[in-house]
Image (cartoon, rainbow, N blue to C red):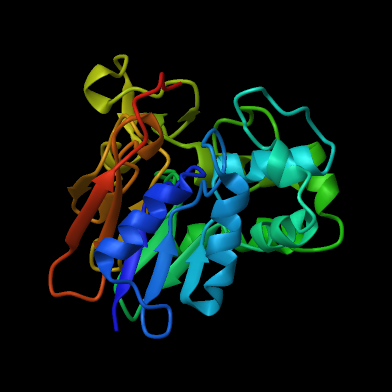
Length: 278
């Protein structure tokens, strides 16, 4: 019996299957926790969702920004891009069932019995993990309900950049979604900077990785935060966090970490042939 977290799959079904084989994953006894972006840009979104859904309660995932993008396209809120590669998924006979399953995923997963919490991107420095879980639930209540299309109408945009408790309505929910699914950098005051995507070493002056804003250290005694989203950061580990997006889609690797071992144990398989990241 084992618990594994896996970084961003991005519709790379073959690589996911190779990783599960290397792990000797048994859905009857083992459990997978995924950091989101199950679909988006990769070659096999239909097959990826079918595989994950078929594993039933052995699999859980948080939502990533590409997952939400796919849901918005399916709802007719935005047009697909040529590099989304979603045509076969959207036209499949089981598309509605698969997309409903995807939409019902949470924005965060708290695993206190393992000492970990999952989020796709990160949490802003104004929040701790428990605050972030409360705000994630605000969005989930709408996204998982019958009026989710109204949320999709107001999902896109980079503002507001700074959290205030008085934020309300769609601005409040948009900030929460941006923080949990798109965040990489903040300024020293905690304002989200959502356009930079390079490694921290190349960041413009005054920007900090979300886990490194001065005066806002994560609390590793609460839990270790597992995240994906940031392929150019790669797999890293620090006080209170482990990042797992090792660039499977961009010629890197697909990474798993065992969570129920005394120390995190990492396993990787090669990713797709190298593409141009953006």
